[in-house]
Length: 122
Figure 1 (tube, rainbow, N blue to C red):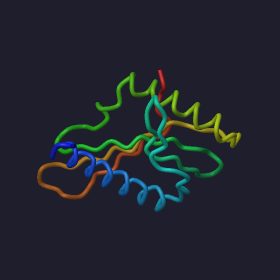
Figure 2 (cartoon, rainbow, N blue to C red):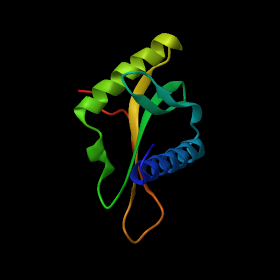
Figure 3 (cartoon, rainbow, N blue to C red):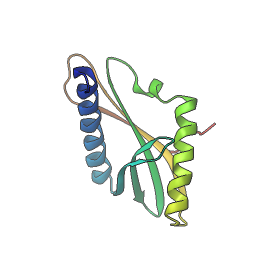
């Protein structure tokens, strides 16, 4: 049985991912898949725009910078998951790993969006 904090964190993550999908669609991205999961990890959003695949990590936080939740270990896991996706879906398109960082401060209930396209993998 999940505890209250785990359920609350999961709910916040789903809210952030829904917000990120709406943001991407408003910017002209086509959402191909959400929550693609392997034994190595999960890709939050897979989208396409202008012939480029974007594997997108969504991080959110209140009162801190969510970028600090993307560690080198997390990037390696994402890279392995991307390779599995590409081997199962031979789309032959250029691709990049990107991030959407959603932050709130204690006084504001709306997200501040930071879009980081093409994260450095190593």
